[in-house]
Image 1 (tube, helix red, strand yellow):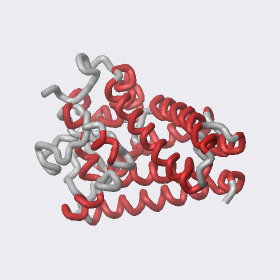
Image 2: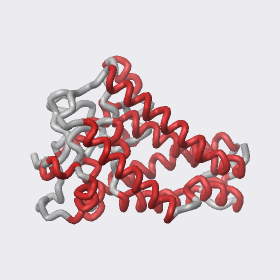
Image 3: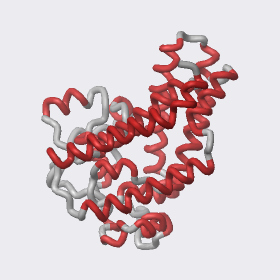
Image 4: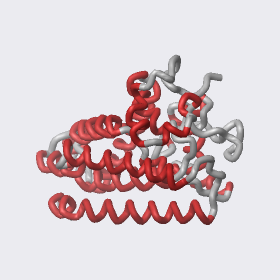
Length: 279
């Protein structure tokens, strides 16, 4: 499939796979939930959906071509590291997908470590429950910054359109999967997290204990956390006993869409910028 064909089919491919995974995870949460939710699902879902709608609109307005179009353009120009290496197509695509995942891991780590970036990212962590919609709850400014970083990475790597599309589909799908409030057999989870970030692995990252929040940064591949020493197997309080969210934003009013959007400029979180309660 050439780049032009991919560009034409990208919206249908991404939307159909996104909806399939979203519906599957939502159904799984009903049939086999991992934890009891603390807030009414309808209220949380409505406001989280509002964030998704706003994010999508802004990305379409400010980046109308999108990441796959950048991949197609770079591929046509023969630019970027992978383009210069002259590797077989399948090797180039595989390396590009892995490299882009590494960039997103590093971006996620930076959004936790740089105070200004954390102010944007903490909206994602302020959700008092974690389920499939949490995987879509990101501040619009974070989404725009992330898109800019992604475009630069695609240009530098010379990631072809097919690799970018595969990466985008995997990233969206695994984000829905690993945020889902679903129960997996312990044995299956233990093996599965060798190749992909599982819900139990990522849930640790949403603990309100700071050392646990600053672990398990991966969305798709689990290897980066093991490589850089940020992997934590389980939460100290157990998956059913752990507290999800941030200490500074536990009031239900922070679930409202307008309050979520204003959260980066809130003065209610002093030292630690609204980070989880210190150890």
